[in-house]
Image (cartoon, rainbow, N blue to C red):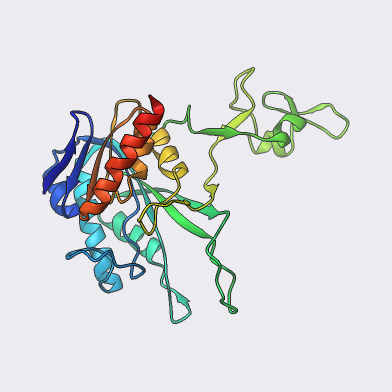
Length: 287
């Protein structure tokens, strides 16, 4: 492991993810946000890279990496893990859920499965199934009592809420009267909103976003929205966020944007420089 960049608040580390994690102290990171190299989809041309081995070996290597991540996280810390899947001989390999089960067996608590619904999926010529247009993001925690910033993890509730309710927690009936029973009452729609706060709701577990369109020489940058949401929900200002597969630096940019500190790790020095360039560009624009 070598330090590629260190400004006293943020760091970029050059080396194998597992080796670098083993150098980090216990309970030092509040939140981990990452997207490891996808299994057998792209080779980055680096000795020791993850993703070119067999399926089980791939998942076993990642389990070792995230076992070390479990040690590094604070007691109430969380992991937000984006994992891609692959079709083998026309069948789904099911890598994401198989990996998630291995992580749970290794000590992680599997809190939520989020679907990233891609609004601009890659076109496919396949004629035997629907075009693939989603990926998974797993929210994992070190313990049941984990940190989740519910106050800021909100989205607009939409027109349905405003047209059905004019008093928090009470639903309009067909005649316009407020109903004490029915969908709104039995399902708790609006019942937890204090007076005057009824235009937002908790994030749903389907996140709609286009894939990242970038001139960067990185094969699979995920959209800024994903690490933004993860760090908003999984950390507080000045907290330390870690991405052990930092790639083109999207997580690092999201951290700077939302006043978090970051540690990024990558085996490829080219991507660390790419991250450093993006950091510099963001700071220049922000200033």
